[in-house]
Amino acid sequence: MATYSYDPAQIYDGFVNQMRFELQDTVIEGEGVTCALCDEEYQAIINNESGWKRAKLKCLKAIVTKFAYEVNTSTDGLSYSLAERYDRWKAMYDDLKKEAVVAVPTCNPNA
Image (cartoon, rainbow, N blue to C red):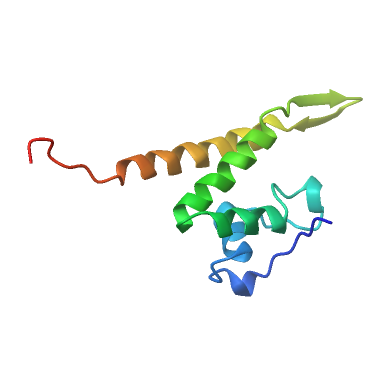
């Protein structure tokens, strides 16, 4: 059973609360409807990656993949702009990916 929790007093815990805070996935009241990932998905990714930025990038990739199929829709005057969620997460993913690529040390091939 998937769980959805967030404690704003624990945003530096190095686990789910911190990841939710950094990714701004903190509206847990709607559970799977409002949250990008459940606690167990975040925790599994954090546990399996060697560093925080790698885990964050992996979380963002999972979120972008999950939201890629969502489209905008309108019915009887009620509209949902679901594609905007994808755009926001994709921009975060792209920014972090660029940062990760820049952070890779290089060496002189002639050395």
